[in-house]
Length: 244
Image 1 (spheres, helix red, strand yellow):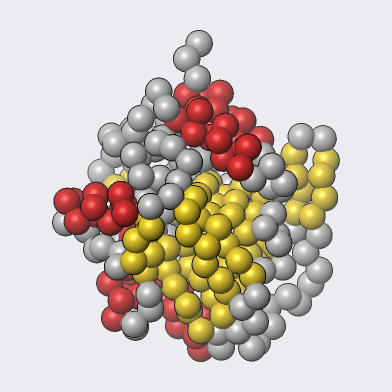
Image 2: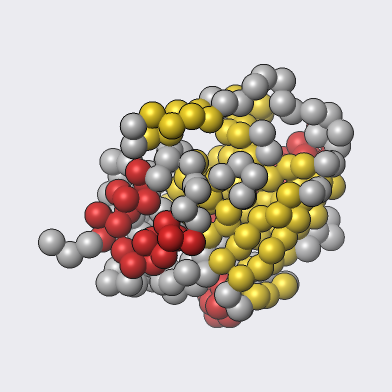
């Protein structure tokens, strides 16, 4: 494996926020990859939308012992192929699986590229059903409430904790790095409501509280769009959708 950790990634707590080092490892017009902790990376791709224009979309990569898991595909086939090539050729790791954390296009728009490479895909049973109904690329392996996947000797917990951005949204947590990928359920600081077309706004705050309770050691939070941060992103999302 071509080792990525060329510099020490240090995590530390400062008041309510978390400070961390970010290293850009790959950057083109279609895809950017940043390392945010020893085993965890963010991939950023771009989706053209009618309502919000060109939107940067976050996904997560977990790499350990020559293996990788991808959480949410890049927004299209081109960026997905670029990501797969970067992992397999540049980093010389085996992509063990790809996970779609809800059924919207920014989570699974590049799924066919993963399937064409024979990479297993995972999502909740709800996500699979909703993707089929929408006519979107569909993950092949389902779970009900909770699924543990492994990259090398690291475990990643995928868990549905309630409705919010969509009826099927779930989160992925990396215990060793204390990183949670919240996807579009979690908002970056300072952003607005975003797409509420399939949302359960009434349930959303309670769902994010469930996330906080389920993973109390979280230090880094990756939202579906915008800048990563600490658990203040969870609190911001709760506050945003709590009735005044």
